[in-house]
Image (cartoon, rainbow, N blue to C red; front, side, top):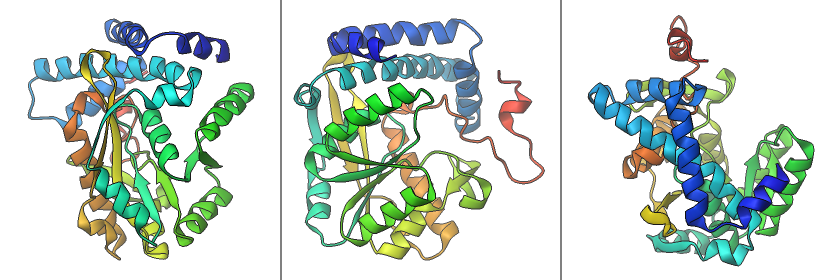
Length: 293
């Protein structure tokens, strides 16, 4: 895996993305898990579209999904300055500037859209960023990947109780923490609220972090520009209800904020993830019902 990433690091962004589009096409022409998960997700979240329109979105989604993988080789295989040079424009940079100047902590909420590794490298260059990560299954690749990310300036903490404590301490001290808000938690750690009109188990963690530390939240994401010209970084304010002291209201606001991000480029969102697996009691998983492999 490390050798493959280093080989991809020798390529231009354009060449890596072309390979990624081919990988995405290979996901489309066969009954792959990625294709079928995305098909279910798009049917749930865009019921108003025709089947033809959803299939077009599905093909585009899989192409972007393939590009995410090959772009990682470019990001991890090149020098940090070269990766930062791929950023073409930063939208609403004043939101980050104001938040960093604030004495309160800053919680960066970064949904899985575009390429979040590009966002991570930009943020790590701007501030001392603490983020949670799930270790890779291969310990050698995990150690290498962790060194690459930390070389960029990020502090990585595991998705464990100690990692959670580190996030709280970081925000309490006025630091910057990053969180991926669109991953499904365990039932005991989530609240069932709508996302794109679908009942969705949503993590309580952002609510807990904001309530207990008084931190400020900002949504952030990096979108892929067409024709391999690079990426744009975006910052937006979350829905104001995200600061509510009611967990259900705050989690619903979090999902509305993610919806606003998705609306910017729906085809670049990670629809290949089983976001709706855990449904309210008595309702089966939509993936099981569709016999997703």
